[in-house]
Structures are given as C-alpha cells and as structure tokens.
Image (cartoon, rainbow, N blue to C red):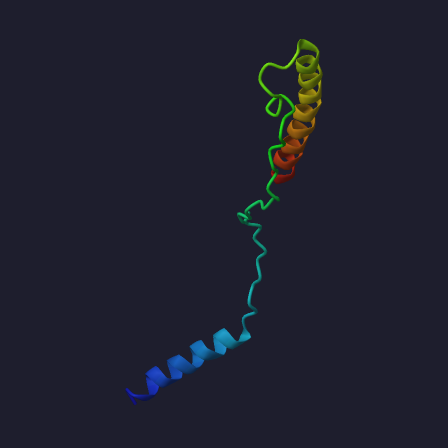
Length: 85
C-alpha cells in the first residue's frame, strides 16, 4: 500500500500538467547589431597637392577648391553617422 501512494500521487501530478496550457509571453528585448558602413576615403585635398612657392592666385584657387572638397567629405561622414544611429 505504501508503494501505491507515491505512484498515484505522480499520476495525479502528471495529469495536472497535461491539462494546463502553456502560456506564451512576447517580450521585446533590444538586441545590439553592429553598424557596418563602407569605409569613406579621405580625398586628396587641393592644397596638399599644391607645390611650394606657388603664386597667390594658385593658392587661393586651391583653397576655394579645398573648401568644396571638405564640405562634400564632411557631408559623407555626417550621413554615415546618421545612418548608424
């Protein structure tokens, strides 16, 4: 009789587990995903390629061209940063 009681108890527990429905809970967890961007190359700026001893007009023309190059380069960098945020 003492051996039958644990068997009956286990059968009752197993029957209770079979009738319960599993509860599914959706949990939103942020997952880190690395931002992969193509490498942005630094352009060869116009002033860096200017030979020493150039005239003032060549220097000014190169400085104006470099300003446009820097603005374009900075806009590419800004776009890459904003894409990763």
